[in-house]
Picture 1 (cartoon, rainbow, N blue to C red):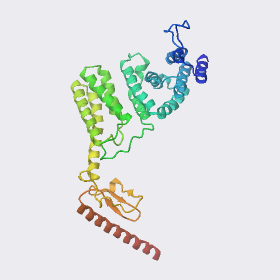
Picture 2: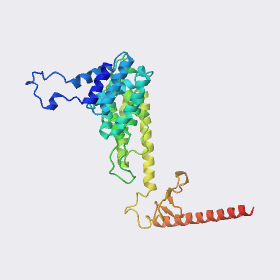
Picture 3: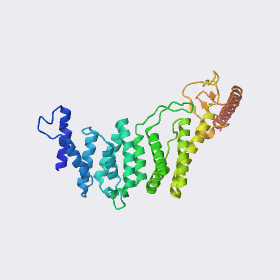
Picture 4: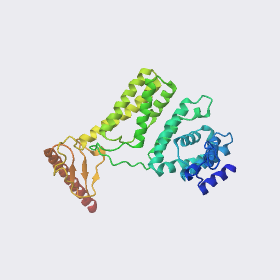
Length: 350
């Protein structure tokens, strides 16, 4: 009850540090090393996250969540890391109130701003370090790093809408999830170079191996940079001789290779090899509201845009090839239309 009252007090009155009010501690006879009231309350809440009583843990976690969301205390990666560790601790599985409150807080806080999502980037690294360095008897050691990491990646992508990327664009910026993957890859390389903890190396490789990459990782040049760094990580991990870690890092590398292959196919598909861009005939699309033909119906590495008036545009090959393909499809459309008229007339006669 006392902790709830302190949290409510902070929510209502916005307790400020004395230093922010321009007061001189020496004039007031206060020791400058004395923590403020807000710092004392924050310390109390953080300490109770480790309390043996589940109700005390829940009150502390919910109080921190309220204060963070309403900006009554400064958000720090260390606080988010402690909340993530508690949320994924198997000891809290049966605490429905705690699970419910945190399940609402994390997505809402991450979706609120890019700054908040950046805090989760730092919190993920801190949390993984805490798990890898925790003694085997510690409750932190029982936290599943893969489950926690995948959830954090989900938080990083909330309301994360980068500029629309095309296969011929080389100016898009990395998303936060992509930056996080780069940090994990660099962490793997650092552990290999310093011959660090093998358990930590296995954990980071396991996390990378279970990440599901988005459909497109940046532009082609960014994807090739990813592949170069991943190839370096695969070589380092292979030299360590850990077969399980090698399996996980190769699984991640395979995802990148598949994306690289699809990205290169897309560049050919959309005619990226033409030097001067689209000609006037290339831009012919008939009408608005064009629909993209499904991938399964695309023939001869050609993308067709078909509108409701059966006008067809092709975006690959030479000008003569496009005209011949246009004639072929036009004849096919006419044959299909004629067949449809025959079938409809036959059904009316019957």
